[in-house]
Length: 217
Image (cartoon, rainbow, N blue to C red; front, side, top):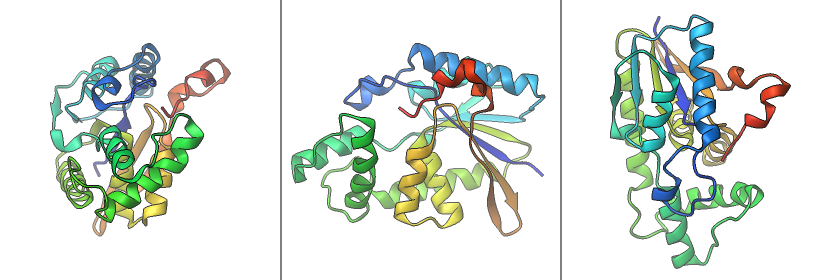
């Protein structure tokens, strides 16, 4: 049976405070993607189809992976606009943007809660819309012929887990927080739906010599 492998993009601009500034790979992010591509080739992993979102960090990651396939870009695979919503959350509710990883761990679940409850005005996309488009695009790709690889973002991968596994909001936020750059996440189609068979795997970063390259932001 075919399966769908979701890949989070490589490390992006970690100093960014807005969507545009964040949307480019760091030097390490490009290296992570090259290592992942080499690992897939070395282990004989063969995909029939390749997809990515339309964001620069998605396109760059897929290019550096050198998949040897035409990569079909689909805006439904784009990330939620975290920075935009974080700025709105601050302006409307006084919740400051996080400055550290520790602060981000507390901020993301809070932002998700406000977003789902409709307590942030003028968001680029409602929570329900994001949930619906992720469900639709993952189901569509899973219904295709042959194994598929999809380069996307952590929030979308977390939402794919939510819609396929019925995760509650806390578990959804925790899944998003755990997802590492260039990590692999695999869904296996079953008669009853999609089953998660691989989560947050980074075999291309195993070993002490690459431990420095395991990143979340």
